Length: 222
Image (cartoon, rainbow, N blue to C red; front, top):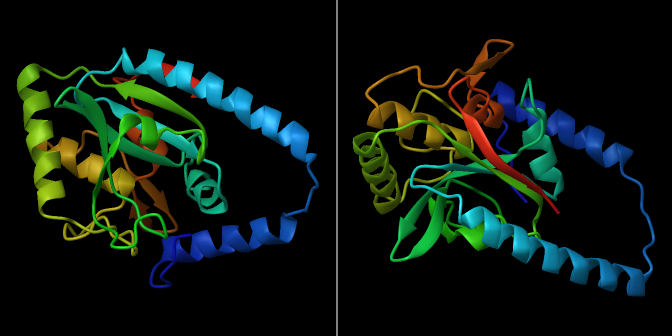
């Protein structure tokens, strides 16, 4: 679970949403046998979907996912227009394997450094309820520049930005990493729009895919 630092408006919003979620939670009982069968079916479906969607991938594609935990639900609520996705990363083909670069904090990433995970792991049904692949029309030169920028972020081990401060570059949260990678690679400052809530500016996941130039190639639901 992500530890939320109470130092800015966005952190206050996340904490408020967390409290609402905890208050509204209800415990349910599941039949063990039914649950086991359900997981087996999910695993079969997810493997097929992942294999098929990987065939669509191109370097520089954005991979969106919907986590199945409480914190993911909170981050999805920060989207103003489309609350489907809670996390995002950028895919590249390296040594014959598709990998996704992404910035994440919490127990799954204790050192909070930018991660490079196999595509299959990034979209796994074990921790997600679905994912999508989004593409922007980039030239080969732009794609190479984007790859160089993202790899430089990774080599420099840039940590996750717990303060969600869009105006600093020494730490990056997930959507911010993509926002700044595209802006730097394409030599612009406004490739994506931003979200402003009560005077606080940030980049949400739907800012990343809610663009007229974006094309959703597939949407997989587990």
